[in-house]
Structure formats: C-alpha cells, structure tokens
Amino acid sequence: MTSSHRLRRLPALPAAVVAAAVLLAVSGCSRTDAQASVAVPSPSSEEAAYCGALHGQLPETVTGLDRSDPEPDSDLTAGWGDGAIVLRCGVARPAGMSHDKADAVEVDGVDWLLEKTGDGGTRLTTTYRKAYVEVTLDRSFTEVKPLLDLAAPVSRTVPKTL
Picture 1 (cartoon, rainbow, N blue to C red):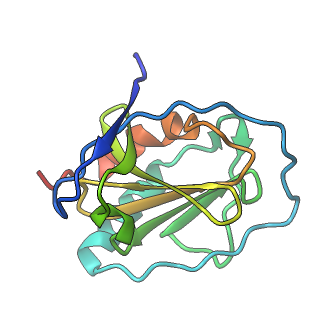
Picture 2 (cartoon, rainbow, N blue to C red):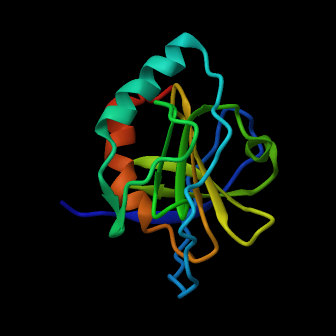
C-alpha cells in the first residue's frame, strides 16, 4: 500500500476546501511525561456516532508513540506520546477554512486543513467529512507523518460529505 501526501493552496470557498501539500521533518524536542488534558467536543448525535466508530479503529501506536489517551476519558478524544499527538473528533468547523488560500494536506485520500498553533505545534482538521476530526501535533513534529497512521481509520469511519 502506497502512502501519499500532497500540498496545495485552498480557495476561500466555505464548502470547497482543496487539499494542499506540505512536507516537513521531525525535530528532536522532548516530550512531556504528564498525561494531556483536553476539552471534549460536543458534536451532534450523528457526528458522535461517527466519532465512536473512529475511536474503535484508532491504532495503539502512531509514529512509534504509544497510545496514552488524554483526560477526561472520552470516545471523542485520543492521544499518543503523552500529549505529543492528540485527536479530537466532532470539533466545530475551524474558522481557518474560510480564509483565502488556507494551507492543507492530503494524506491517503483524507484532506486536512493545516494551521500552526501559538506554541509552535500544528493543528490539522479534516475537510469534506461528516464530522470534523482534529489532530494536534506538538512542536517536536515538523512533518505530517502521524497522519499516515490516522488517515485510514478516518477514511473507514467518517464518511465524505461530497
């Protein structure tokens, strides 16, 4: 099975977010030993059902990091590497999807909006899916490689909107 990722600029059309390609490299920042704490989303019942299915398909390791789900325990959240990678399913539509030329990445058929966070990390949110899935990567990640482990479960459990 071949993995792919491409980068393009996205148009400002609210319903039309086109995948963009980004290739970054991993740097050697240390990870924390403390378990992460995250806000649990409040999706609709339909979105929560997709998120529950996704939760059951998520891998035990992502880029070699063991699963360590954040607090509070929820089927809407997951984590790896003690907060280095955090997934939240059923989040609100990101404001960045409305911006002109938003950056995004396509990994194995799943499109993700790409945004930098204030702490130097990266937030990626699915586009063209019936529930928004957000993945945050701490600043030690300068590539989107973790999405290679997460794209297939998202693709299998959260249908496209197109």
